[in-house]
Length: 420
Image (cartoon, rainbow, N blue to C red):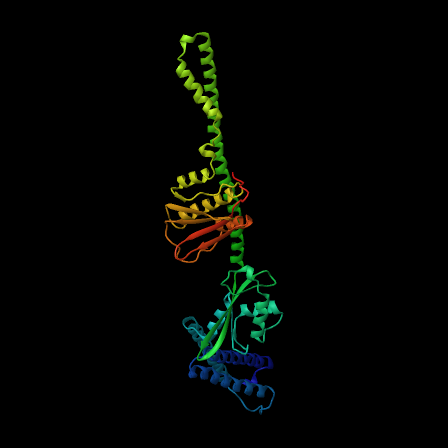
């Protein structure tokens, strides 16, 4: 039986089958080109494509009666050839699939780069794009509404739209897209095979910004709680002191009552009372009544000195701290910050405070015996709040990191003699 003896439908099925084989070999040919295989690996599917194309064209010509109807093609031979071509196409497909699993091709690298969440764009000095992944394409299309042609001009526009408040000082450009995502774009000059190129990377830092903002909020809450705890500690100290004062007053009241009873007994029965002891008892209680000197706990900086003792920090005071009422809270805060930094950051055991008085100001220097800082100290938390308090009082603050740590505060003196 020959091909020409088949019905039109049967010949159509064979044509469709042949066309399918033709498309498969065409696909394999392009696949080999993109995988950059050996020359023979590219030529074989190309040759098979050519053979299948010739068979397909010959069958079409028979269908269109461009060839004499007396020309016969054995059906068995035709089916055998087409089956062999189909089986070999399956074999080639398996080979390509196995090769892709065990090798990395240029297309594999491109697909991997396209799937990266980080945008990558490499361009020349003239702004022409050499490589760009899908993330970068989507980001630039979102920012500019179209495909970027000149990357240099696009980067200049990004510099004008960058929001430095969303990232650190050492970060690149920070851009927010239409969906609220925050990208950090960094620029880097690279050289490939002697050609100077520029690489842009766009990293999604939305989560990091959210965490940073949450951390700032928590730090603010912690700062408020810390201030409240500090005030609570001071309150506890003064409550304890007031309790002790009440105890002293009660004892003094009882002593005076005893003095009155002793005096009354002396008047009624003079011989029953030791008059010298009674007089000494009276003098002692009268001395407590007329003595208006402050108690130890009423002295300025008493609470902070006790706090240093509890923390195991020895306070070495050189000179006299200010006693003006408006300066005492500021100096007290400075001493508290200095004690905390000595303990936490310097691992020290002794905090030295040197006070020098000039005609118009107090110059207070804070040092410690702990380890010296390895780099420049950055203000934050306690030091920042202390600077605000000092500057609000008309003073100034200076931090020295090298060669040794020193915190220096200058506060204006009260020329009118307003003493606490």
